[in-house]
Amino acid sequence: MTVEATLETGTLLRVTGLKKYFPVRRGVFRRIVGWVKAVDDVDMFIPEGETLGLVGESGCGKTTTGRTILRLIEPTAGEVLFRSQRLGRVVDVTKVGKKELKLLRREMQIIFQDPYSSLNPRMTVGDIVGEPLIVHRVARGKEKEERVKELLEAVGLKPEHMRRYPHEFSGGQRQRIGVARALALDPQLIVCDEPVSALDVSIQAQVLNLLEDLQEQFHLTYLFIAHDLSVVKHISDRVAVMYLGKIVELAETEELFTHPLHPYTEALLSAVPVPDPDYEAERIILQGDVPSPVNPPSGCYFHPRCPYAQSICSEQPPQFRDLGGEHFVSCHRASELSLRGVKMR
Ligand code: SF4
Image (cartoon, rainbow, N blue to C red; front, top):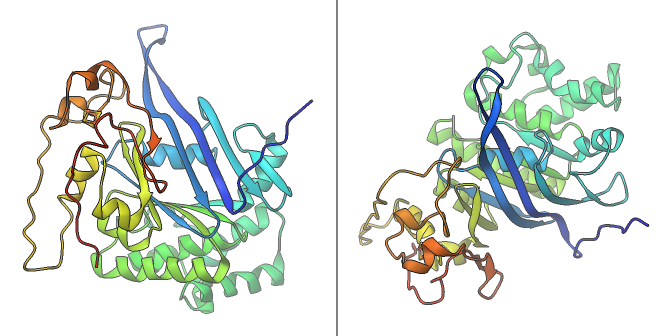
């Protein structure tokens, strides 16, 4: 007998124990000699209509987490529960068959980081935005054209832009085309994978505002991946901090920024610029490099760089636990440390 998966009311996505290990192969026979633990036991949830920001340094596993949730990359282990409107039930994305996965693709979309390389230069904007409609047999001909026009208008472009090619647009406009393509199938969840990192600062705010407007208009839920904490602070309802393939802290945005509980979050926040001339920032410089995910440190992965580490930190991995008010942290000393946050404006 199969047990139906369930989710709490109002929750769109819940990820439990998600892992993605890539094999390291050597020698003539390409034998597996180790594993890159890109995503290592990740837990998170996103309520409907909310934005969860996912931050961390380059190479910490953020992008792999996003793609594994969408099953663009097959997970090694874990569960990704998603409330599917089309299937009319909660499904484990990691276990569905090909046919159901194709239906889920309509509800779970992605916006890529690089608006230059993610659009096919030989296709017109109309063909790029309309391609998902053809692939999923949602609309064709005149109907497709009308839908593309609507989508272009929704992202602040003009209907006549559909006859042009990507190279005729600026970076910000290209990212708008990417957003229109992600919206084409009327999704519920969009993984925004560093959507503004490749854009000028002045354009970043416009694209972020567009994403916020669209969220309200279409009741979208975002997993917003970024390395820039200021960007994440602007758009997220809650923030998850990732280090070496693990989520080390997750809380509401204001709570996380003003009362961080993990020493790594404190170090990241110390680098956030605060627009207040009376505020004296004291940057925390972490010692050493990020360890290799092939051979992560024992106990707490952060212990070789943590200024608060004690012997227990290298001996036992800390649990990811709720210290109250859905403020989750993975640190042995979280309840005794008094860490520095930043002012919210
Ligand atoms: Fe630092 Fe120890 Fe906490 Fe890890 S568990 S973050 S090493 S204090």
